[in-house]
Length: 258
Image 1 (cartoon, rainbow, N blue to C red):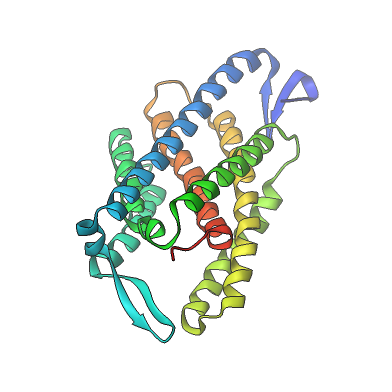
Image 2: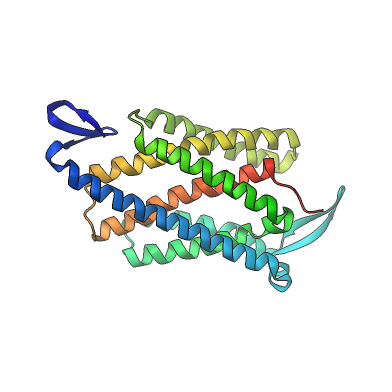
């Protein structure tokens, strides 16, 4: 933390009385640990579900099928597969816009259901890419996430402007991805992946600093209902950054199945 004027510690744009700094640090570390634990547990659940579905032919056939294309055959979602792909969006919308109306236990349940649904939607990655390349890219992603999150937590620079710029880049990626659904340009997809990596790397740092600053601004007390719900919401933000970065890196660095 940076020492601000009048013996107050500044976290982002929030100033904290110096006398409260020790208690704040303890509470902040505990809160951030809870956020990271939720994020990591969600990623573990997603990975387990994806691996089980992909390695069980009877299950994978429910979600994915091989279809002929001008270039041969390709993996395509079934109707149940489309439901799996779209369902995480519904969970994100409910958690994002309804977090204040949900109880802590309901928010936690929705988070675990979301992580499982993401596992269903991402199970095709184990069918498209080799297991070795999936593991390699996962550890690359984890290293990049850790580095940027640590930087976002420790930097004294205000990342608000960078976060706004990255959000504009995110909307641009979404629009470009929708366009590419119709034109199927390999060059555009490559550009989307490169820009997407930059965007989500930046968002990891920004969201980490935002979570830290929000903790100070709203003084989340240990054990309160608000703190429990915010832990889930903040874990969701970091989870989404990690998963999107992983998928973009996999599209760039992953080795496809023969």
